[in-house]
Amino acid sequence: MLILHDILGKLRDQFEGSRKAGERGIWFVYTIVAIIIPFTSSKTSNILRCLNTLFGFSGIAKKRFYTFMASPKIPWNRLWPTLWKIIPEPMTDDRLLLALDDYINPKTGRKIFACDKLFDHAAKLNQTKYPWAQNVVTVGLLKIIKGRWACLPLNWRFYHMKKSLERINRTAIAAKTQFETKLDQAVEMICEIASVFTQTHIVAVTDSWFGNNGLWKPLSDKLGCCFDMISRLRSNSNIFELPPECPGKKRRGRPAKYGKKLGTAKSLAAELKKLAINCDVNLYGRIRTVLAYEQLLMLKTIKHAVKVMWVYRQSQWVALFSTDTTLSVAQIIEYYGARWKIEAAFKELKRDIGSAETQTRHPDAVTNHLHCLLFPMRKGTNFSGEKRSQFPPI
Image 1 (cartoon, helix red, strand yellow):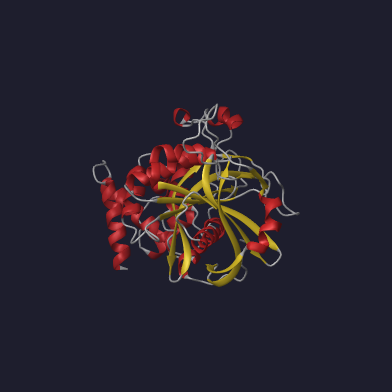
Image 2 (spheres, rainbow, N blue to C red; image 1 turned 90 degrees about the vertical axis):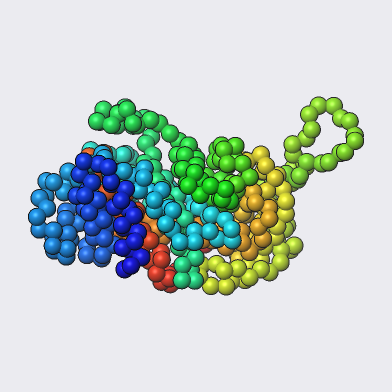
């Protein structure tokens, strides 16, 4: 409780300077505590009920609290960096591990800000493939807590489809809504985090959708050698040898960027399995033995030399790559396996905390509510060390 008091006190101080600093700061702190307490789903009405019942804020008028939750003056641009700075020991092996992914948040009410008909690739047979939902791009910190990997959300953005901006721009925040791709949003968020953790080696762990030159090039240009990426290779990704070195030998034309084409990740998987060696890895909460083969190769998807490895487990295989060639096989597999924790965080956010149940519609109210729900995500199943009943595939 002393740690929580210290954290919330620093967050409350960020409201200093505003006209209603005392009131807004106290209400914000107790709102975060009300979300942490497993009272009920964290809809705005339930948060107000928790404040009245548990904390004795019987004098808060419903209209005033709803106005506070929809206020455009909550200083999120100062609150988030403050939270990042007070994270104890955020580094892992002298690296800041960031998980990057997006998720959809289904809704039922109409005219909810940032909602649209979105394709759900994970929809079950009895679910629609185009639910009415919000699409949220999220960056989280990967860290071992109580012996198990956990994910703490650090930043997020609503993704708006280009064809929907005309409808969105008719709202009161039309000037603030500009089209950005998911990769542009990811670059912006990681750069904001890097501005707080200066001179820190950042490693982004992503799935195959984000693991391409659209993320790698702008971040490597802005952050230089302080940024690296671990991702999964698509099965049809073409793989090349490193370019040949010909010192002192003059040749016409520009130097070769790629060596001999070896094939795709899928075509190489079978023939390289006989060269794989056993490796013990801390994967999904316990030490597991996997077969792995590594090699320095070139990828056209990011136009850079990387360490590519094929990981074999039972009858399945997966190809991973890392731009940080100093990482060992065990580290790359462990870090990529830890990426699954951001999926667990999405599930906790939507079901346990109750993000999917709230039907707030106003743009500022929707944004503030999601900010408030992501702030106390350091509690819950991701940080409790609770064992999962099933382990996801690598």
